[in-house]
Amino acid sequence: MTYEPQPIDTAPKDRRILVWVPGRSRNQWYIAQYNDDRYSKKPRPYWAWEGWFRVTDVRANQPTLWLDLPAAPIEGAA
Image (cartoon, rainbow, N blue to C red):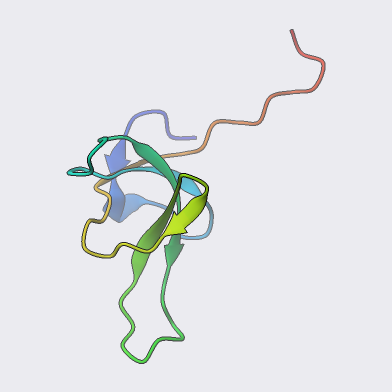
């Protein structure tokens, strides 16, 4: 697992991760998934992030850093 922010160019594209999106009104981390846009007439890969309970398809303001999602809590652990 990655615990230090890494450049987005090194991010895994096969799972959801945390991404940092600069310039947003709230400069914060988002859960995101890579979208290769392979079914579009003009493919343009991008990161779609989840915020306020919906996926945001904003291609203009893409993330610059990433982290692995934290592990799920273990049931019954104190």
